[in-house]
Image (cartoon, rainbow, N blue to C red; front, side, top):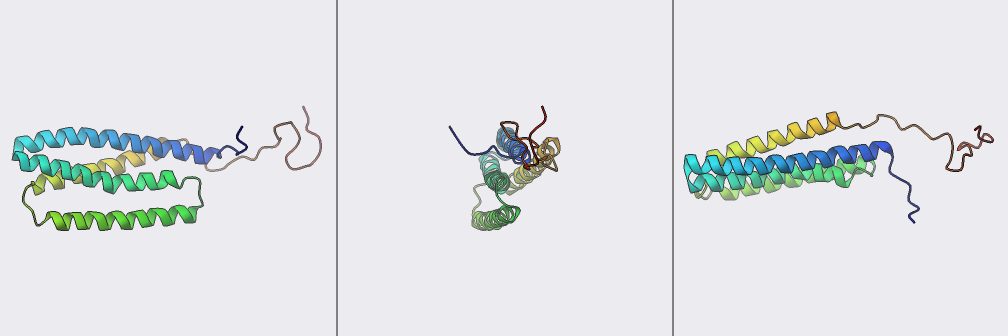
Length: 162
């Protein structure tokens, strides 16, 4: 038996909302991958395919780190969550800029397809994150229990009334 207390309602609801955001983002990026590769192949041939693949990969790095950071820190203090999210943001910015700097030296991919797919992936992910948080049933306050598991008052003010 586990003696750990269950997570408060707000933490569980927040975790559910961000799991939904992660799932929806992965589905959206999968659809974007299929559409981007197809449209890239039709409009620019193999360079379009490579542009779409790279664009989806960068969108996954850019958008996925935020959702995963929040999910990993949902049960921690706001200061810790903020530090992890800011660190992840800085890390992903560095990775994306380095990747784009390295890619700028090559011409095996279509830059327009990469840019459009990356833009669609990041914007779509932001919209899905917003939707998941808006639809998530995250309470603003946590009511304190008035009785313990055996019926005794939590605050010690006397016997519980049945």
